Amino acid sequence: MVATTLRSRADVPAEDTWDLTAIFPDQATWLAAIDEVRADLPQLAATQGTIGDGAGQLLAVLRLQDSMGERLGRIFAWAGLRKDEDNSNAEAVANYDRAVKLSIDVGEVSSFVEPEILSLPDGTVEAYLSAEPELELYRHGLEDLLRQRAHVLSADQERLLAAAGEMAMAPGHIFNMLDDADMHYGTVTDESGNEIPLTKGNYSRLMESRTRSVRQQAFEQLHQEYRDHRNALAAIYSSSVKADAFYARVHNYGSSIEAALAPNNIPVTVYDTLVETVNSRLDVLHRYISLRKRVLGLDSLGVYDLYVPIVPEVDREFTYEQGVETVLGALGSLGDDYRSTLAAGFDSRWVDVYENVGKSSGAYSWGVYGVHPFILMNWSGRLRDVFTLAHEAGHAMHSFYSSTTQPYTYSHYTLFVAEVASTVNELLMNDALRRQTDDRAFEMYLVNNALEDIRGTLFRQTMFAEFERWAHERVEAGEALTPDQLDQQYADLCRRYYGPDVVVDEYVAAEWSRIPHFYRAFYVYQYATGISAAVALSRQIIEEGEPARQRYRTFLSGGSSRYSLDLLRDAGVDMTTAAPVERALDAFAALLDELERLLDDAE
Image (tube, rainbow, N blue to C red; front, side, top):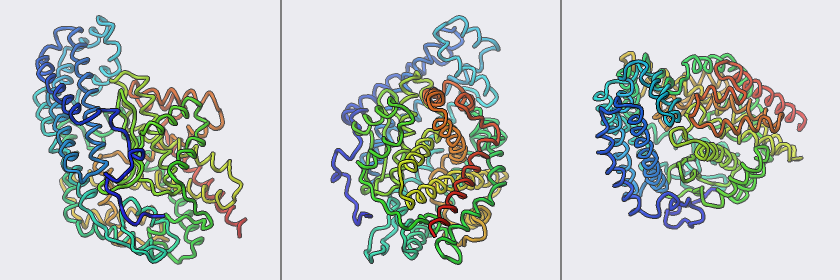
C-alpha cells in the first residue's frame, strides 16, 4: 500500500536507517578529519616543483595524494549521505557544502601533480619506474596519464580550473535542490478514492496502477510541476552543458563526448555503435508496444500506459525483510562468499530503507574505501523494489570487492562498468524467480518485467544518450538551448523510439527536465552498454557455472587497475563490437516471443 503520509527523519526507527557511525562516530570526529586534511594541504603544496627531483619524490607525492584522497572520500561520503537522508536538514546541507569546498580546495592544491609529471622530459617516468620498485603500484595510472598528455594543461592552468570546480558543479546542485527540496506535486486520487500525496517515491507505484485515470493524473500532475519551471530548468541544464563544452574545449578535446569518454579509454565509436545498433532494431520495440496496446485493450497508449504490468493477475507485496530474503536467495549462482558477505552487510545496516520527508529520491549505492558500501532505498513494497535492492546490492558488492582487493589508487571502478554488476544481479534474480515458480501468471509477469528492464535500460537510456549528444552538439555549435527546442527534440525522439502507437504530448515533451543523470554528462549511455554486457555475463554464469563465476569475480575485484574494456574482455564480453548489444536485443526479441506465447496460451 502507498503511504498516505511521510515520516520526518527523526521518526524513522534506527534499524531502518544506514549506520553512518561506521564512517565517523559523530560530527566532532568528522570536523577533526577535515582539520587533518586541511593541515596536510601546505605539505602537498610544498611539493610543487619537486617531482623532477627523482623517483623517490614522485612516490612520496603520489602517496600523500592518495592518503588525502582516501580521507577526503570518507569526509565527503559522511556529509553526502547525511544530506541525502534529509535534504531539508539545514545543518546537513551546510556540512555537505563544507565537504564540497574541501574537495575543491584539495583538487586545487593537487592540480599541479599531473601537469608536472607530464612536463618531465620524455622517458623520465619510465626511468623512475625502473629505479623505484615501489612505484610499480602506480605503473598503470602513470602510463594512463602519459596517454592523455595532450589534454592536461600547465600546472597554473589546471589549478585555476580546479578552483572554478565549485562553480562548474553549481547547475547540478541547483537542480538537485529544486528537484528534491522545492518541487511539490500535490495530491492525487488513488484507485480507492483516497487523496494521497504525489511524491517521486510513490510516483512509479502509481504509474503501475490498474486504473488508467490514476496513471494519467499522476503523470500529468508530476510533469506539470516541471512545465511550470521550464524556463528555469532549461537555463540550469543549458548552463551544465555549457560547462561541459568549456572544459572539453580548454582541455583540447574535439567534443564534450570525447572529453567524457577518453579518460576511461573508451572510443567514441563504442557510443556510436550503441546508438546505431539500437536504432536498427526499433521495430522490435514497436512490436512490444503494439502488444502492450492490444493486451490493455486501448486504441492508443500514453506514456503513462507503458509501465503498468500487462499481467493483471499478479499483485505481490513485499516487506523489506522479504525483499532481502528474496535477493539473497536468488544470487546463489554468484557463490557462497558473495551471498554471505551481502547478508552480513544487510544485517550491519548498509541500507537506508524507507522514504521520509526531505530524503533524496530513487536509489543508489555509495562505496566508501576502508569502511563498506551504503545503499539508499525508498522502499514501497512492490516487486520493483526487490529488483532495485538487487541492483544496488550489485553496485555495493562491486565496490566491496574492488575496495578489499585493490589499493586505494585503483579501488574505484570506472563509470563505464558501473552498471554491469548491478544489472547482472537483476538478470540473475529474474532467472531464479522464473525457475522457482509454477504460477503461470507470475511467470508472465517476470517475462514482462525482463522486457521492461531491457526497454527501460537499453532502449530508453540510448534515447537519453541521443538527447544528450544533441544538446552538447548544439551548444558546441554556438546555438542556444531554449525550452521549446529541448521539448521538441525530446518529443521527436520519443516518437521515433516508441513508434506510432504512443501519443507524445506536452507532458511527455517535458520529461527531459526531470532527468538528474543529465547533469553527469554522458553517463546514461553506460546503462545501455552495461545491460548489454550484463546479459552476456549472466548467461555465462548460469550456463558455465564456476569458470564464468571466477572470471566474473576477477572483474568485480579489478577496480580501475586495468582499462574497463580489457576487464570486460577478460570476463568474456568485447564491448568494442556490436555483438553484445545485438545479443541483448536478441534476448529482448526472444522474451517477446515467449510473452506472446504465454499470453496466447492463457486465452
